[in-house]
Length: 172
Image (cartoon, rainbow, N blue to C red; front, side, top):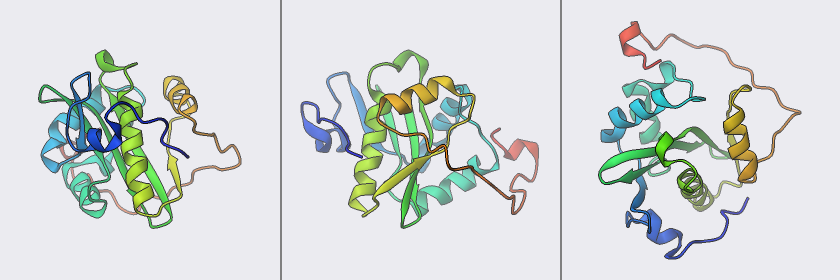
């Protein structure tokens, strides 16, 4: 999947931490961003949080997938975020979120394109997302940006352990 047309200044400028014309900076997600990002995810409809989103779990994810996840920042405040990783064969995006007042400005697309560019650099040829079946706004975004629904697949899962020792440890 192509990242789409480059805007003035190109993708390299956007990923280098330079602000776009709108003052939005797309930069790597750092562990220090956790509190602001988890607050954004909690406010975002269509983002489901669980034991995989604890401080410890996100730190491990970022270590395992260095410089693949991104945040959008404006005036020092995080207004968007996405987790990105891969298993060596396929890429995966999780929890794409943009603050309500900043939507419809291309921030989500810029975050996704930053991830896809990094996955391409890593030699990954396909990327998958997980989206709740009832997330109509999310489906509209992903279809609009060129993603295809794989109706022949179903997601199956098994819980290996309960990472949340207590309810306060879990961001859900």
